[in-house]
Image (cartoon, rainbow, N blue to C red; front, side, top):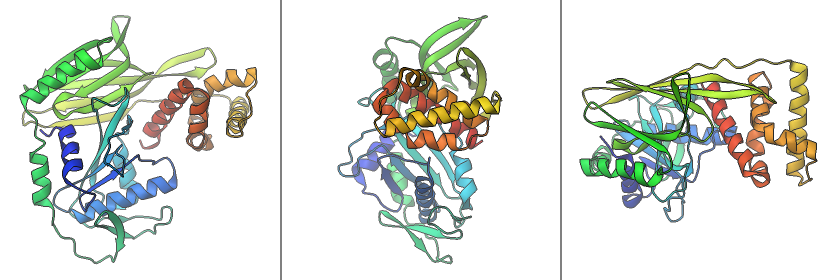
Length: 378
């Protein structure tokens, strides 16, 4: 098993950006330009490394390799995005890797790309890139190349050495468990479970018991062996269950207008651990969004957009505006789920204005966008 934190340190310490490794301060796949650039880099790295893994490290300053971190990115369906735009898509995962010195909720993102063994090309136009385009890495740049270029394996040995140096051991595992329980979550109820005598899953959160069931909020779940944060949320309610071979989370989302809110099951994730030292993560979206009267939602949608425009122009909010502002992430989410396609882009465009006005509303807005990613890529 590879300790992903060590892997990132090895990548940062021994390599500039090259044909198997890239680093980013942040990813933005919420708009067409950011999505297109991400797809281009994935395509180029897959084509430049047909026989080994390629990596994108997210949350690193380009100038001095300083680890600055990014928000936890809960997007198990990123493979669906790649499949939609790339012919012969590589296998891709996005993992959230905790580092001790980062603030709570901040992690380093690790994108792992494994070629399917065939030349990857764009299926269709996206932003300024044409369908049919093929990209390769030229040093630290992802460049378009002619379609019939020969793909060569030039990095297998060096990537193998980097991954070998990042292998886990019992000391790292024990240190990780103790750090998780004693240092990072001393104020929360913490638990751990060992699977197949190899894997250690730790989780911590605030607990609430309802009808003999325990639900968690402020939940943090980590696979300690690989230093991977599996789940993090400050707002949702989550139910946890486990058996000899599986660890299961069921996430619930509180939705509604004004005081009329209820919990809706959102997603179930099952981690299955195997005897051969591997594991598989399967997720299933359970969400059935509540439906509301369109005329009422038009009024809410327009009111929210007026508030966002006021924030952009630095116009003070009225008391009535403030009341609606605190509910804006939840109500704009409901608008999107009821067919108002522009709601998501509005939330993306105005994030920084909301952050400047009220950090708590900004956190709720990020949670709403996280939910939309889950629903959208399903």
